[in-house]
Image 1 (cartoon, rainbow, N blue to C red):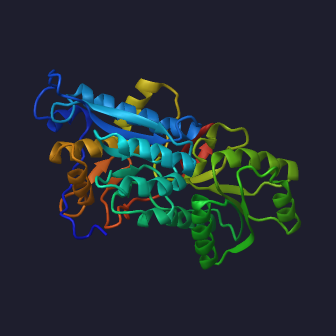
Image 2 (image 1 turned 90 degrees about the vertical axis):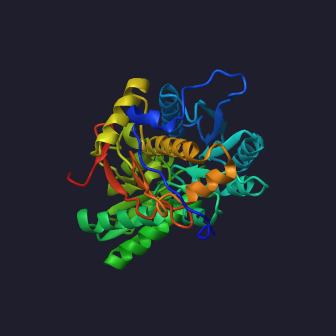
Length: 381
């Protein structure tokens, strides 16, 4: 538990004000090495693209403005393939890099949970801040583990409320990937939807290499179908499920969690609703400036909650480093105090203030809908 630690905090700063981070210009002395941050995620997969690009964007902006304490930031990148066993190996490599002071990552819950003991198991715990590991179990992963995203409890509850109250659904079918993420979304949606008065028409687990979803969906159709189908899994699964619905011959409203990010360019995805921590078209000057900078740097490359959150994490770490210096223990203590002893950090994804378990309990969920190849806000649609 970290409730007894001395707490401090950070405040938001924008790229044009980055000079406040530094105590001088970048030094040219040979001994002035960059400050190294780890970046861990499935970067060889589409879902890792936005996270990687946005983290590099934040580092580039900070370095152009003078760095932190006169030193440049540098990212040490490890691809974890979103697999627990690969994440453990990536974590060992990052932990062994002695100049590394913190890690941005991992992206998925399973990878984060697998890697967490590595980062916290030595004499020099390495702070870890995940942009999108939303499984409830991450709460108990250790005092060195933080995340800036809403949990599956928030996602499942928001989806249940949206389905029942906004879509007026009274029956729901759930297909959930049998992992930490899928079980988390499935459990909280089912609890919330039935509490409101809804009925579960089916509730089925699957594994990613399932040969076909057709048996599940034909059985659901034979039972009378459902008003909504909840896909508690990844965009890769949804890309297989959507055309199977057409094959079977019925099409309920489809909903899913934030792991469906990236589905929007898939044929047949128009009208799919997802919960997420962030959408590029949400209001706010900070977000507008971030989106403009991202588009200027990367054009039409995908931008999602993972990228926006990684961008916020890099800036949060830069502010923390400016306050306490590049020391793992001092940095860990500082992060534990964000939002308690001092004001929280206001980023493009919203306000970040950690509780005693490293969660951000005030982070809200945004409902999006796929429209013409884009995921846009759904509240007013």
